[in-house]
Structures are given as structure tokens and as C-alpha cells.
Image (cartoon, rainbow, N blue to C red; front, side, top):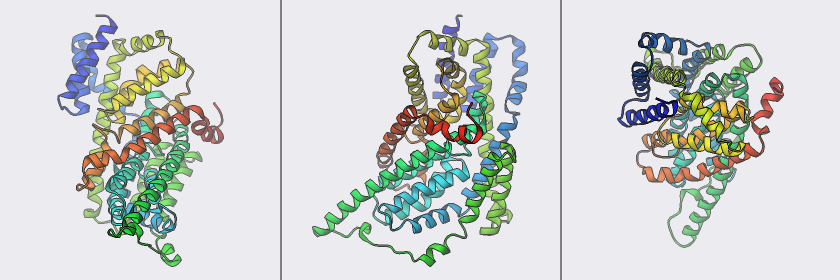
Length: 449
């Protein structure tokens, strides 16, 4: 069979197997081993376990379970609630301050935990009831948490960035730094929309009340004294110090990413033991179990995805696909648009982990040939995959929100996320027009490449 026909068959079989409901890791493994059996030497099947082990026996990948442990320790503790309460108190006088507080809390928690679902769950479980109690519409309350949670795969330490660094053979430290500027941009856009939407809902609530309707909680003033604000800081500051300390250790050259992840995990466990008295086995077991489950799931997906990519490479499917894309002679930006559109479509069905590992062998060579900076593209691709976390049919954050706020209809959650999808699209355009937003900080701290 020609590589084109073989590639088409490979793609069709993959779609069919995934649509069968089989878990992603097993689906990729079944497709890869089946094609090894039919189209590769018989001896290749004897090397499946060796190939998978060699692919995941990476020092860079070692940081994944350690960052997951750090995030789980913080996420299973009351740290998210305390962080949210402190930011809300300090921003209570700002119009739309509650919405801004949720955005900032999501950003800070994402930077500590590195996980979108964990951010949604930790901040949303406190933030959504508080916003609704104060009159925010259910869709807006759900949308701002779902969108804020996506920052978990963009702000360092991001597990998605780690996988992209492995797949593209780029510097992980540079990638982490490259995510900071776009992360701040999205925080500003989300916070700006929160102010606009809160003002709009406040005016509507005031209009209803002035016409004799019920008084909305929106119209109630909430005051925090300076002493109350200061009282909230002691439980938050240790975790902010942890965040700063981990970043200094990584970017100051004092530790490798894996060592930094281990340091962060250890300090997170110590902090929850000291601050929240969570040191007994019954306190530790929930986040240890969560870490083991999520780490095993991710590493199994990574191993099977890399085996899947190995088969594609051996059968010259990825090389032929890349050559075909190059042969189309698309303009630089049209090529980027086509590839990002493909990522969006894949985001309907697949999580970011699988998208990166499955598409990297095909899309990165043409992009490199077209002159794109792969660090810059990795960040843009991550923002596009963030959109996949909050758009149907698979949008993971939508179902996390539905789980913590089951009384909000899924249709309202989806409608609430639509403005944030538009803001993410705007951010992508800005990153294309001003690539320095991505590359400026890495070039400043690590030198231009």
C-alpha cells in the first residue's frame, strides 16, 4: 500500500476504535499493535513493551507525577477556598470585583497546581456558590470558572507544556516562561469581561428593583475592614511563597524541572500539614490516591501515544503527511490556520495530551520549514487546546463545572463559556500580530535564540 492509502486507513481505524468507547490509551495501543502485526516485521511485536518503556523512561516526564502530586496536595486542601476568600476580600470595592477575584484565584491556583480540572474544582466549589449568592447569573458564574480553569495548561508548571517540550524537543524552561505573557493577557481579557458583565447585570438588577421587583443580592454592599483583610493573608502567603520559590529554583538554575517538581511536591505536603493540620493517613490518602490514578492514566496515554507515533513514523505515514502538507505550497499564515483548525476539530473529541503526541510528528516539520518558532507555536497551540476544554462535545471543564454545580443546566454552562471562547480567539490573533508577547520574557531571561 502507498503511504497515503496506509495513512488514510490508519486514521479511519483510529476514529472507529475511539468511537467504540474504548479508553484513549487502549484505543491507541490497539491500533498501533494491530498495524505492527499486519504491516511491520513480526519481530516488531516483541519490542512493544521495550518501546513503550523507553519512551516514558524520561527524566522530563518524571516531573509529571511530581507536579500532579503538588497540585493534588493543594487541590484537596482548603487552600483554594482560602485563596479565593482573600482575593475576594481585597477586591470587594472594585466593580465586578467578585468576578475578577475568581479569575485571579484561578490564575494563581493554576500556577500552583498545573491542572485545569483541579483549578475548576478547587476555585469553583467556593466561587460559584458565592457568585450566585450575590446575584450573579448561573451561566456567567459557571463560564468564568470554566474559562479561568483553562489557565492550568498554559501557566507554568503546565503538564501540557511538558509533553509539548518532549514531542518537539524544545527547552521546557523556555516554554514555561513563554506561557507567562499569554497567561497574563488572558487574565486581563477575562477580568475585563467580568467587569463589563457584572456592571451589565448590576444595571439590570437595579432596574428591576426600581420598578418594584425583588431586590437582587447584587445590590447588597459588602464591606471588609482592613483588619479582616489582613487576617486572611497568613493562610495564603505560604502557598504564594511556594509558587515563587519553585519558579526561582527552576529559572535561577538551582534545579532541573524534575527536581523542581519534587521540591514543590514535598513543600506542598509540608505546607498543608502545617497550615491545615493535614498529616494523618486519612488526610493524605485522598490526594495520594488521586495522584496515582491521574499519573497512571497520563503515563499510559503518553506511552501508547508515543507507540502510535512510532508506528506512524516507521510506516512513513507522518513523513508522507508532512511532505504532502509542504507540497501544497500554502502561504505561511494559511498553513498555520489550517493546522490550528485541525487542532480545534481534534479538540472536539480528544484531550490536549493526545492531540500533542498524535499530531506533533505531522505538523511540526512543515511549521519548522515555514519558519515558525516552535516555542511560539507551542503556546498558540496550547491556547487553542484551552478552547477545547470549554467547548462541546468533550469540553472537560464543562463537565467538571456540572459536577460541582449540578443544578446549573449544561446548556447554561455552555452559553456562559461562549464569550470566553471569543476572548481566547482574540488572544490568538494578538499573539500572531505581536509574537513578542510569547517570546519576550524567555528572550529576556534566557537570551535570544
